[in-house]
Length: 218
Ligand SMILES: C[S@@+](CC[C@H](N)C(=O)[O-])C[C@H]1O[C@@H](n2cnc3c(N)ncnc32)[C@H](O)[C@@H]1O
Image 1 (cartoon, rainbow, N blue to C red):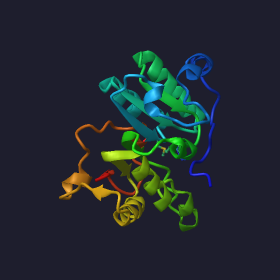
Image 2: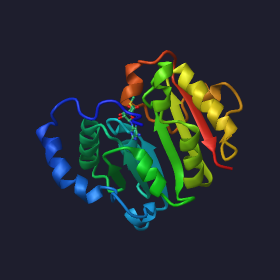
Image 3: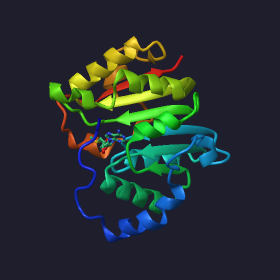
Image 4: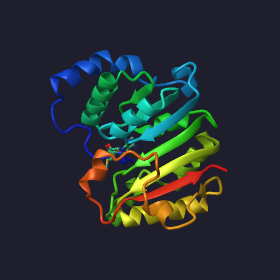
């Protein structure tokens, strides 16, 4: 089931189209076979996954702040991939690896306990009841996150849709492999210190201020 909408909306800018042919093949996540994130960047001290990176602003800035971490980014929206390639190129970033498609087949190929962090930031909300089965967060996705996270690893989920926050919290609290790290309201109302505002976040399209849910794999 598709969890995303359009994969293309406008023609790629010429410079981005060039990066699809030149940069992307050098940093693309292999499309089949076992996937050891550290083999994608020998010497990496940690591996993170960002699902649905949109224009790639958060992913690129985190990569710049954490040069020893390899960040795997997945996004089927091709204009978003083009924008991310531009950020990676302009920032001279060498620690990002991309999959221009659905994250879930990549997730399935990751070994157990291979990631320190997973980010799902402002996923498509699918607010209508009949579309909720398309939401990226389902019990199965959460158990996959638990499988690929190392003990002590973290999963960050952010949305500006009340119902999606409640949906995710309900499922995460039922998942024995995740512990919600909030002690008080400000822990989910205030952005974590290392959060980077995303392009979608700035649009304020949801029905609430952003809600930040941070979980740990105990
Ligand atoms: C609302 S946008 C938010 C983008 C970005 N995280 C931001 O905050 O600006 C959600 C993104 O998730 C992507 N997406 C949806 N399902 C996905 C999936 N299964 N794998 C990877 N990306 C997905 C969509 O293509 C879309 O770009």
